[in-house]
Length: 327
Image (cartoon, rainbow, N blue to C red; front, side):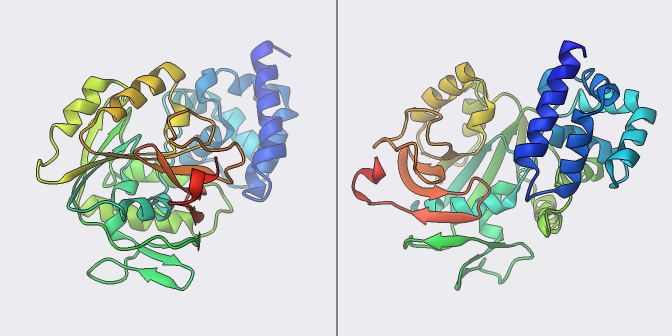
């Protein structure tokens, strides 16, 4: 097998073995099938290496009309639409936009006095720029927008006792290499395709959040957020009478190290607050440091770890004020 095709086989076998179980039986079937089919591996090897991720290739195939059926049916579709799939996947990137992350961000936002000018880096369609428009259910504790229960209700397991309230956000902006438009039918279809088959309720949640963003769109800037000039240009647009809050919810692991370090240096110098959700060992910004067994991703405010969280917002373990932050 050609080297690139062999790399595809290994990558898809690993996905079928380690990532799909418990999340999407269909994607597991497709990935295992690809790994054992040299002809399919050869087709997917034509896609640039950085755009061959199984979730992206599978999503693009569904966007183009591939049936959500077993591997044999899907493989037949790929064989007949190989050029189209390769071309489309070669210009796409994973832009999963999960509003559920706001359930992890909310406790940190509650530490900040409003009004807030909110900026998200790696914003996709900007669905994490509307934490004040969603409803939250932390067990029996409910937090709702001022005008009542939202069409988007986010359920999250909570331990600890953060002071929860609805933040006052008066301006919102996002930076993304290729931002998506919540009101554009094709962009909405792509975001829906990025939801894995079998993830119950997630597509409906994203669709409802897209409706909210489409009615009141944020400022969206196409650019590299790790370029200090791009970040500075967006910050300059924020209202001066609001507290600037810049969020990086799960985006830093996807930025190459040099760009990440450049961005971290820029964030350290902003006249505002930086909120991030990152793996514990991604960088050494946390003060106090966190242990590798932190128990989840780190929710940080200005470099101070305040909670262990699920990166997609399924749980929050509040730790602000713990001695040594479990260092």
